[in-house]
Length: 227
Image (cartoon, rainbow, N blue to C red; front, top):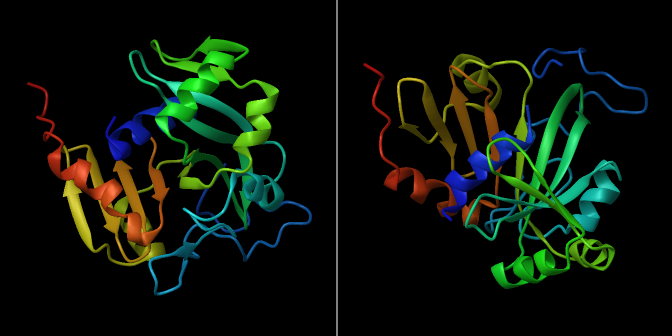
């Protein structure tokens, strides 16, 4: 499974308020000016920090400690695929932002396959995608694994101008169709998917791992407009 494209597909299935409206998502005990999606710190050595987490370094347990125990952890799998081990927040305050978030855990196919064999149950999501609940022992073990990527989906549509205002000019634009464009920020390890017909998606990885997001996009066929 190609990492970037499969991650987009599974995250969009897992997630469906305001995102960039100051003050709209304020909650008690949350600093409205910290942990915002555009506050990305890079260390100059291929790493980055966003939401207090370091993709490729921080563990799933670190995510729980930083963002809360409301996370739901499961294997999300398409037919004939091993699947991805993910943690999901239905609603999360990120500064003054309320958002939905998925963290992808860096687990090997062998480890995920073994977890599937010990799984308690599987629930069908949209189409034939399955959400597989982990055995308690595997759930505890998953907390010790590092996270590979962080994905955030706003609940209102964003245009490209708003994204550029917050994140700056992208290093590259990849247009997959007249509806969908990827704004790539390799120095920050960020890919912003702008979708005119759907929800925008922000994907964060360590900058040194940015090829995992970019290379599959270069190989993806350009979607033709419907006739």
